[in-house]
Length: 149
Image (cartoon, rainbow, N blue to C red; front, side):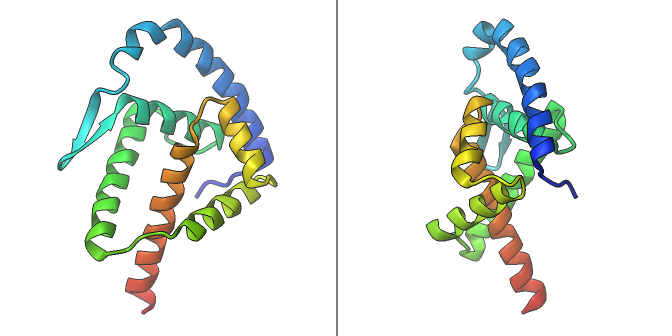
């Protein structure tokens, strides 16, 4: 399991700066297709934008598996988990989302606002972070309910 620390966030920001430069160079052609589906999970599309955002996020926090194929696989797993969670009727409350975001930011000794600022500087949307937290928290709750209850 990977761990978020100030050091991994800082190291990720350096890597993100290099990635941003590479993205700017090829951005004009890619921008036209950024919202085109790169994968489908049942009736749900995964766009190039989502892949780009998740890739930046994972690099920022120092997580393994940040190559494009691994990120797409991760997003496919998230979509499948989301569909299972929907079938199970599980939903994360707004308070639960805030608590998850606070807990995650705290791993890097940052407040949620500070972490969101770091994300913004790395051109990572708040929604990318929120989606990551929602699926992670809800999936964890489902597993706990099934195996602890």
